[in-house]
Image (cartoon, rainbow, N blue to C red; front, top):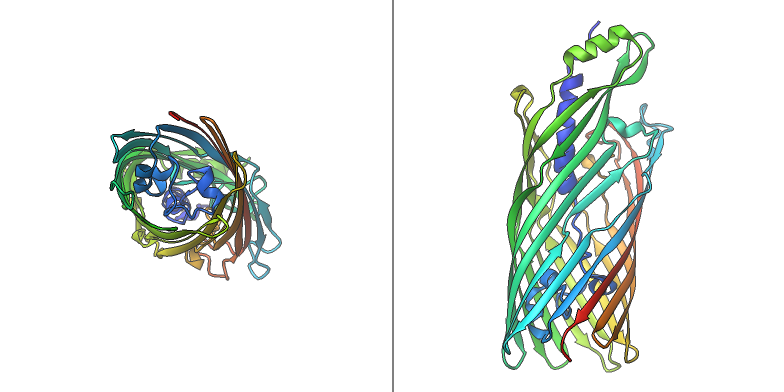
Length: 429
């Protein structure tokens, strides 16, 4: 008796496939400031709080008081999988995400210099992912848990003309990331005729880093404003360790064969290509004092064309696999109105296209086009500032259409709820 000759080869390869897909499938996190989120993320032409370091560094120049801002966004996902009734493996199967909340933080500090310059530094989490399926989960042979963390620190500098009509800004982003992934592998038990779990593969990378840069411009005239910002693409070379752990089946003969073919624990390496983003927006203050902004952005996810993975101990299983993501567009509209001396209200909406081809939709990442609405409030009294936003985000139902590259077909339904909060302190008068 022999196991499938590809069983453990696929085990070692597919866990690394997860790491690339996690970053390259539209999991940017633009929720880097509660006021901006309250306006649906349409903030590039407003950029009037310290989160301008992320959204449009030129916006720092219009802020003439030192200010500190800190907060984060609590994100919860719900996902339901329903198997394809025409698929012999997934028919009648279902699954859900394990309940969890992750909170990407942000913090900013700005300091005016003279009459025309403003310097600042920001801490941001521009990318991230958590897909954690609760047991029993029929897709555990593809992915049980994927956890991607990215943390960035960005010093920035902005200048504006004496009239305030023109401002420009630049920033240098030091970006660090880490990947942790977990999945099982199974085979047909020849003694029982049933699929059994035989091994677990766990990948944990080091914290590896790269640099990216952003720049922005802000133009003002009368009651209108125009803003544009560009963040460069970047790549991180990840190194880490792949750990393979046998799962006893209760059959000594089968367990002995699995043990003889299990790959050794070993170092691995891969490179993840992050996209660039360009965003432009126009804002206007209406006659009844509503600030309204509309933004359009493009993200170059097409940089992720291929995934190459190197195994240090068993180079025979090095991987090259096409991915073929596509560039995407997002559209955002937002409003802000000061309703009293101390209170603002905000509304927003967003439509965000996903970059993932249908054959790539799966347990690791069931991405789809997203549409969401936001409601936020701002409170400011004396030196203190509080912003809070509720963001309901709906992912359109996504089917694998019977062409899943993982041979795991079905329909995914996803929704997310995001609560953003920032507190700040403004120095001076």
